[in-house]
Image 1 (cartoon, rainbow, N blue to C red):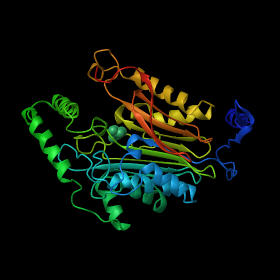
Image 2 (tube, helix red, strand yellow):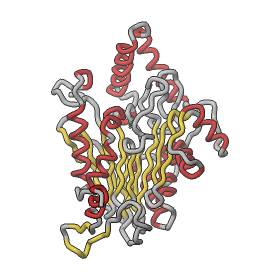
Image 3 (cartoon, protein in one colour):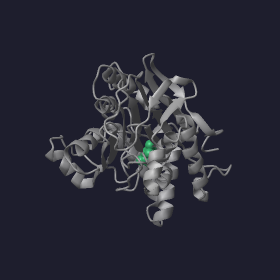
Image 4 (cartoon, protein in one colour):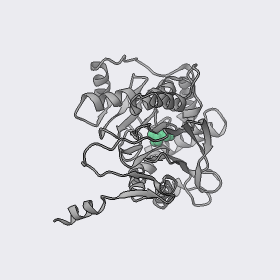
Length: 372
Ligand code: ASP
C-alpha cells in the first residue's frame, strides 16, 4: 500500500463534536460515493451587504437564499438567487450593475460558484455587459467542461448561452464617482505607472474617507455560503472588484481556493477585501483544509488571517503601527452548520437561520482600524 493510500485510509473516520456522539455527523472522503443524507438546520452566511440591500423588494440576499433552500431549492440556486438581489441593486456599488468601474470607466465583473454535492465549479473574470456574473459562472459550471472563462470571450460565451449583453453597466452614480476619481488623479497621469497606481489608490481611499463612497465598497463584494436541510454545502462570490482597478485586473473572487472554496463534506469559505492578499495564500482553501482537520470555522479563519498578516511585509501595505493597512474578511460555515465571520479588523457579516437574519460583528484578528 502506498503511503498516500495509507494516509487516505487514516482519514476515514467519523468526526464528533466535543458535545458527544449525539451530535456526530459522518465526514466523508473524496470519491467515496454519495454523501449520506442528513437533516440539519440550514444556515446562510454572507458578507454584511447580504443583509442590507433589497433592490426594491422585501427580502435581503440571506433571507432569500435561506427561504429557498429551506423550501427544497438546490442550495447553490438558492444562494445565487440571493446574490442576484445585490448584483441587480444599483445602490450596492461593489457588485454587478452599478459596481464601481475600472480605471477606464468600464465595469468589469468577477464571480465564482461551487456546488458541494456534485463537486462542480464555475467562474468568470473581467466580464463586461452582464448584470449577474454569478449566473454566468453557474452557466460555465453547468454547460462547459471548464472552470473559468475570462474577458471578451466570457462575454461571448454569455451571449451564446442567452444572456442579455448591455453596452455599459455604469449607473449615473458610478459614472459620476469615476469622473470624480479621474479628476483627482489626472495630475498624476504622467508619473511612472507604479507611482500612478499608488496615487490612484490613495485618491480612492480618500474618497472613501470623505464618505463619497462606502469604505466597504472600495474593496467590496458579496460572498454567500450555505448549508441546506440535507447537508448540501455550496457557495458563491460575485464582485465588481477593486474600484478603479487597472483594466484586466482579476482579484480573488473568481479564483477557486481564494475568493471561494467549498468541500461538500467539510464546509465553505469565501472572502471580501483586498484580493491580492488573499490570492497570495489561497486562504479560502486553507480555511476549508483547517476545518477538515477538525478546527472550528472561527479558528480556521483566524489561521488564514494570521498568514495574511505574516505575508504582508511591503511597507506601502502597512499602517503606522506596522500592520496591514487593508481589511480582508472571511465568511465560513462547516458541515454541522457552525459558522463564523472573521476579519483582520472588526467588520460585519450576515447570517440567516431559522431564527431569522442578523448582521453580526466579525471576530477581528487585530485591534483598531486598518488606517490608523
Ligand atoms: N476581494 C475583491 C477583489 O479583490 C474585492 C473586495 O472584496 O472588496 O476583487
